[in-house]
Image (tube, rainbow, N blue to C red; front, side, top):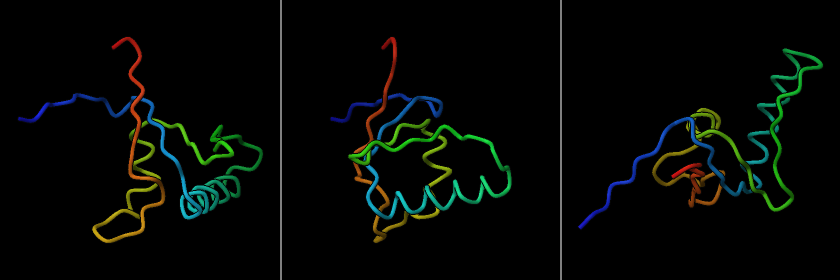
Length: 85
């Protein structure tokens, strides 16, 4: 028997980035900062690799790096923060 879980692309999720994930995010931020100097994007990665973002943003930033057999840029457990549920 399966249990359905409903979520929303705007919900905040937490993942633990590995070295590849940190590199991908750093490179994306460097490109954005080069294009928009002085603009702060507010992305932070904790010392232990924890990264919080909206689910759609996680998909946008890392989707092209995920496929069957790939080395994922973060641990495969995704925590979904659902306030008020």
